[in-house]
Every structure is written in structure tokens, then in C-alpha cells.
Length: 201
DNA sequence: GGGTTGATGTTC
DNA sequence: AACATCAACCCG
Image: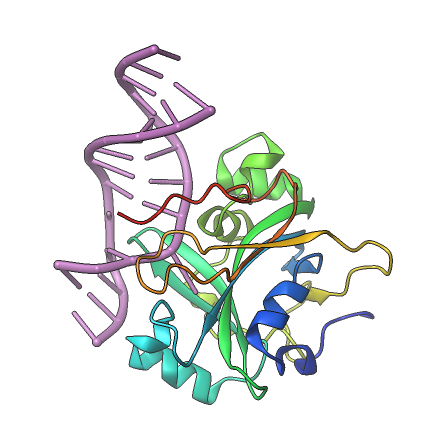
């Protein structure tokens, strides 16, 4: 397939990559959607990043290639899908938080048990469920030759750029002030609109 | 619309 | 014990 992101894309500053992922089309085993919301987590100096508390996350960063999928279970029920950034000025993990559904919508509706397209991928737990992503997909390469069939990250067409805004991250208590969430401004498929994140209790 | 609550399991 | 969530339920 042409126009796929290469490892080089993920060998840059994690904040730059998180911003640049807005507008990229994520394909996952036949389903697809445009990334409209991301969050950056920095390997160094970010208390909210898994690497701050989990040796297994640091091991993942050490051993996996740029662009690898970091998948984990949150709140005991929801799989969350992240992409690895490394070998650039600032390593990190990028949480994919929302997609605008494009392909395989019937399959997504079935997996989600929802009919409205806006309810399919407007949150990190929702999109993993819609795409059928589980812990079995932890470590999946998303760049290069060993990417699974029907899977990958496709560059947006020239001239289809989104208006990207930055905001605080959702649902964290540590390092909560960093404006490291990126959104396609005004897009109805985001999880929380710009400026609407509640302060942690 | 907005706020609250309960379900659930992996990690350290 | 904490936790990068969601849907169902209340209230208005």
C-alpha cells in the first residue's frame, strides 16, 4: 500500500508526532477511521506516563520498534491503544483517543452494540472495542513489512488538513496541567470537546 | 443537558 | 490502592 507512515514518522518529538497524527487514517484489520484525538505521554519526566511507574512499560520502550502498538487494560474493562515514539529527541507513548469512522462501520456497530456513528469511536475504550483490539494485539508493529493485513497508518491527503487544538489530558491526576491532548478542532467525533475536561478530584 | 455511580481486573 | 473508562441512571 502507498502513503503509509514509516518508522521515521515515530522518530521525532512525541508532542510533534501526537499533533501530526491528527488527520491520519488508522486501518485495523479491515476497519478504518480518521484520528481526531490523541494524547502524548513522555517517557522521561511525565508522572502520568506508564513508564513512570511500570517496569513493563519501560521494557516495552526499550525493546519495541518505533510505531509499535502499546495496548493495555484500564479500569478492568477497557483496552486502550497507544503508539510508541522512540529514537528521536523525546520518547513517549501516544494514546489514540478518538476516530471518525470511515470503513467497516457495520462491523464496528456490531462490536459496540450501538447504531449512531458518533457512539462508535468517540473515546479510547470505545475505539478499541469498535476495532476489536485486545491485549492479544500488544506489540503489533504498525510500520514496515510485518504489519498485519488490512492494518496500518495512512497519510492524510494533501489539502485535507485539520485545524488542530491543544488541551489538557483526560482522566489523570498527576502532571495534569500539560496541554498534551490534541484534537481536530470542532470535530463531532472527539471524546470531550476542547475546553470541557473536568479538573481531577 | 449535566452530575453521579457501579462494574470490573491488572499492575505494582 | 490506583487506575489514560463507559453506560445507565438520576435530576431538572
